[in-house]
Each structure stands twice: as structure tokens, then as C-alpha cells.
Length: 81
Image 1: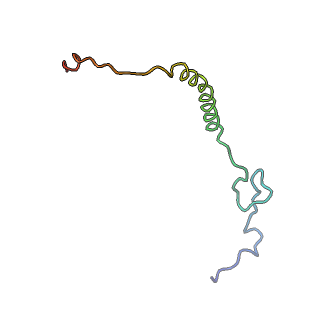
Image 2: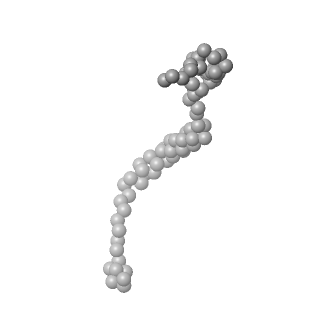
Image 3: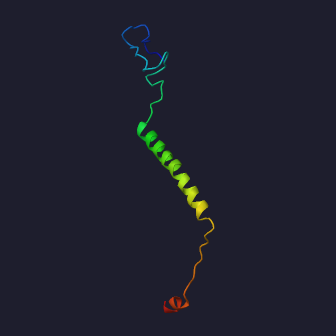
């Protein structure tokens, strides 16, 4: 507690400029969010791919919705194993 105050010395502190996009700042952290364009582009491309495939999936489901899958097991194949 008995230390000499540095506030009276003009050369003790240096004011740093605010980051780009800031009108007022407390520290050097950016005020504008940095965007990860690679991740955003990948997610957008994947979403566009899924949206593009949906009409084909709907068409396939409507066209072949009446087809039922049944499993016919041959008794001779089961006896051989």
C-alpha cells in the first residue's frame, strides 16, 4: 500500500487506439464480431443441398409409397447354416 503512485507520471501509461468499428472502448478487443466465412459457407452449401434434394425425396415417396417391403426367407438357406 505504501507504493508511489504512477498516475502523476505522464509517461507511465499509453493510451491505445480502439479497435476498428468502435466508438468507445475499454480494452483492445474488437467491437465487431469476426465472422468465420469458411464455416458459414459450408453450412450454407449443406443447407442448399438438402433443400435441393427434398423435392426428389418427396416425389420418390409419393411415387413408391404404396410398395411394401417383405422378407421371404428360404427355409433351405436357414437349414444350411
